[in-house]
Image (cartoon, rainbow, N blue to C red; front, side, top):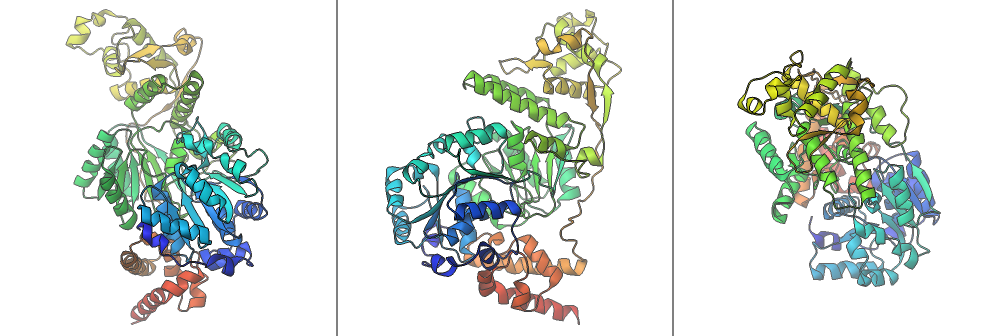
Length: 622
């Protein structure tokens, strides 16, 4: 969608139509849903009553409705602070498809396009305006807002205000100016990712001490979590894709640009459409690949973490990590891009020793103040501990955000395939002793060779074949030793050098273990592959005939989207189409009862979809 599409949207629609409506009425008529989640309703009521609030809801939980509906109910324009251009474009595109007058102001617009939108704002013709924090804080736009009728300020992705966080944007810390300059206009700050420390910083930095706080569950119950052992990761990724997502859209995250290119090429050689996305590409290349991901079915994006925060695509069926995230917040945010439509989705990860080494080096070499470095180290250790847990992954993930989860989820890898634990005390002591006796100058590969008693020139020339640790680890195979070293690093018993050579060194944490004063029980990682089963989508369960109709509806949706130049999901998302395929409505009233079908879309597309369904029913009866 280009900028001028938003500037040419119908004007003067909002206040006249919705000012006297209830929130529920707007939800049904505009968005096509029949009920709110409790947190949504409470937040909407608070904003409509003029109160500030902080909203924490999981990705895909409907955060945007908490400010979009009040923007339609209140007099004036709802101003939304959003950190990424892609997110603004997706949100505005979706709103225009609902008949809502929306626009965005950002660096992608030409000067004359900006002027058109600014005039709409001054005339009160916009129901929602999306702006980047950098632009909002300019004196020009602040002055423009002061001369306009503003309904509310929404600060989306509010965790960007936290200097402890993974998406820190210094401009977000200046957004407290909104309260200082527009003290009578309600503000709503929203995020899907914030631990207790981050919540406190949001409140402090945005001056929200008096704000109502609405905290929903962080549980994404439709996401199935799995962490693989890190051996032959590309082969394991392909096995996962073929078993669970042979034709689905998804995201594969890698830590480096080089790895992104390599993995994208490798997947492409296997016959899937896989496109790279990283900061080393040109803007045109990134936009082209992102558009293909948004508009086409079955596309896999292989990306660094630069991709995804602003992606509103609801039918991402999997997020795979081939590198370890820096924190649980980052992991939760990235995996949360899967299954935004509520249907079954996967979060799969495979990582190796090198990831731990690299991330630890990055933390130690950071030029941040010591306090922030300590927090970064703590977050990384929490992430590493999560990967090695033997408990239900959902329970551990939610506990990080101070949410209790009773029982086990029955859907993560640890619940489906309960891991064994083993007494690793003696093996760990051998490993630590080997690090010490070789002079704390070598990496995992060399140390493993010494423990296995292998004969090579390096070991002979260093005189390490005469060490007491030479050959004392023959009872454990090569891969298991590498996994053990990874676990020792994950739990903080050893450190890596600062020079980036992958050298392991002892630290104070290993003293009691090395001296036999501490026991160590570890997760036994199965080197062989786990059973892979196609995940059943419990939300749809389409029959073969219904699946045929669903595919026909997708073709119609794609034709409409291409004609209008919008992503297909802005017409209807997959979940709505699946419900159509199951119910098979034959008239507008029945179509309007389907989740995600509002009055504007019935007027715009309703007859086309009803005709397709009717034709299918008639053909099916022949």
